[in-house]
Image (cartoon, rainbow, N blue to C red):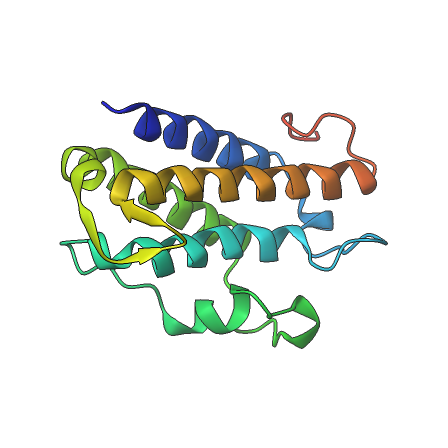
Length: 159
């Protein structure tokens, strides 16, 4: 298994661990200095991955187009109709499914050539490395929101 796939798995697992340890009372809280909440960051990781990796998927996996309207760049929880926003549990489940997809398709994914290069990335492996970095940025934001919300241990659920 390639280093890119191993790294993706490690960081995606850390993201879902942090999200599972997030108390319900703060998933939609936007602390001062932050433009979005934890739920938006989780959905953004999900939607961004699908947007970038979908062309390499032979499974024709599709994300509900509503997710793009809720979570891609330029969107904001301030504009949400909360009746349409998926729960954090659903987002976690979808993030885990993405990781499963990467693990199942690792062999072909890392050698796949992109039809259209993305920011100088030409292979699936390069794109996966870029997306892993993106995941890490948002994991830092998620944990920063948790700290700013008074959570001292971002990895352990409150009791």
